[in-house]
View 1 (cartoon, helix red, strand yellow):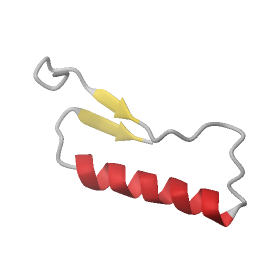
View 2: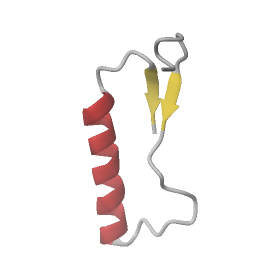
View 3: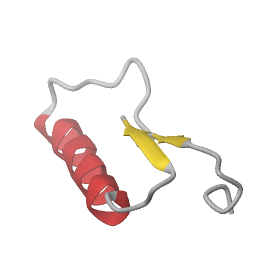
View 4: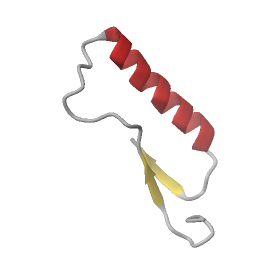
Length: 51
């Protein structure tokens, strides 16, 4: 709906401050979420930033 209204969007994965990125399981989950998000939405014109 936002794209049809011409609104540009910033998309984020649900990772917050204080996450223990030194733990391999946590880092792998974050990398996987980011990869899935970019793969899913890479051709959407309204998504201008992924973080």
